[in-house]
Image (tube, rainbow, N blue to C red; front, top):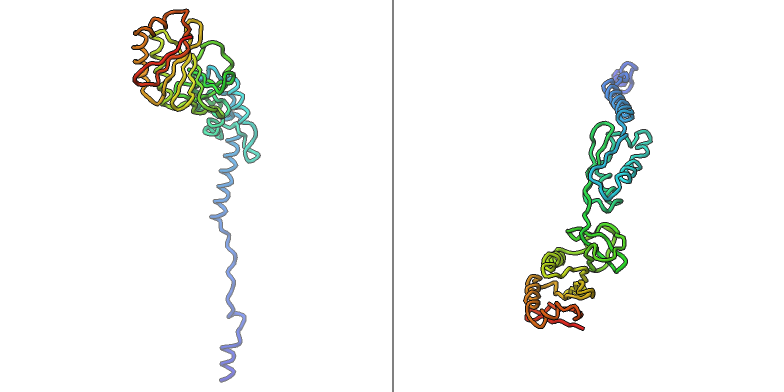
Length: 277
């Protein structure tokens, strides 16, 4: 009995040992890998086809900025390869948003930029430019063009005379930047609209302090100044000026070429202060 038990529980025959199953090939996985490789290869071939390379760049809307410079910049941005084998000139790889951002950073005159594909070989760069209405100036020699919204956007050459109204307001930074806020801009535009009606053509606006704006103009060949408080109602100050210029002795002295006006101070709500040499 011992022998039977021993052979049954301890001794094992070879044919009682578990047999290893033969290794099976995962054909499904191999098929998927093969399909993925084919897709990748075909995609690379498609991206590299000469017919889908950018060969034309059309610039629309540039007037002051040189369209040739914009075209050259885009061409430079599309040089080289991605992943060492994919040409950046491929119409499928054109980074529209990056180009738009880089163009605005490198061409400060551009207010908006839109890059789009026209066909498989042409991209269109549509831009709008800031329009110079004023000069924002850090000092008499260093000025930037400024648009109607108070944005200084590009260095300006030196202008003599009154080709553009000059705005002196603080210290600038890299263009484009908000040079004048909405409230100050409203004061400027109001003065520019209404002062010429009475023969005063503003040339320079100097924001001296929060409560003093000096507006210089030409009075019979001599520089004169109007003083405003930009924190108060500009229309009220102008109405006071209109009244003063219709009332003697200011009315007579203002219209006499031999009386040299130095300033008219409109910062007081109840009176107009003036000085002649």
